Image 1: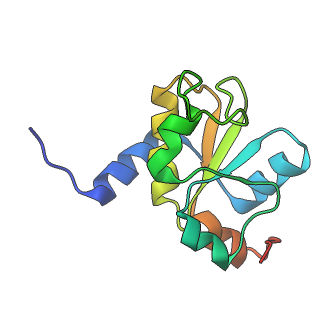
Image 2: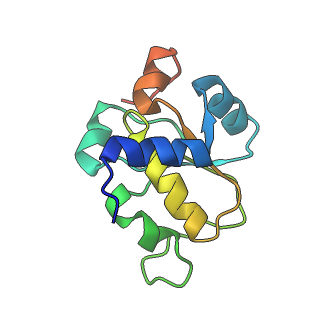
Length: 126
């Protein structure tokens, strides 16, 4: 068995998913074409959130995203455009890969996460 680092897993995920800039995410949200999912842990939300995002912590994401799960969130539909974000882009890249494994066909993540969103001067709720 080949052992990998967390950084290697993130790089592999990023090479297999759609990586979006803050401008691209903002455009999709403005057009009403995507559901934005914040996979950060609950305490991290205190640093701010992106308007309209739904919270689904990384630890529970697969259960929230699986329509057959008793924990399923109806906002997570395998047929919809789903964009994920975390703080800096690692967890959301891994989460996007997980959703692909669950049959989500149109999934992407905000490369650089909430930090990139803020650095780009995009609006956030505090």
